[in-house]
Image (cartoon, rainbow, N blue to C red; front, side, top):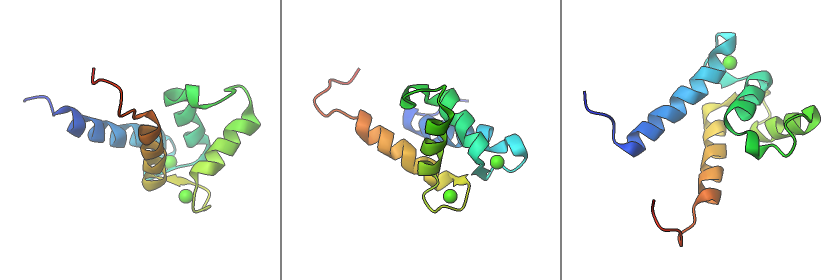
Length: 96
Ligand SMILES: [Ca+2]
Ligand SMILES: [Ca+2]
């Protein structure tokens, strides 16, 4: 089996990462606040100004829950990924 092209692989990885953290409570469709916290700490620690500051982390998690239903769904997760992707992109940077 040939390896998936890079973009396709990235898309598959995004689903896998979301499901890995979301599935901890048996429901892999949404991240509870605790699951979202683990995802941030595990995958994006540099995003957190102070990983030891619980109040700040909870604030970041609340920001992710855009519709305020108490959990982070895949779309809300993808909005974060999109935002980070756009922030990371520098048109003047040479491709590696
Ligand atoms: Ca869950
Ligand atoms: Ca939500």
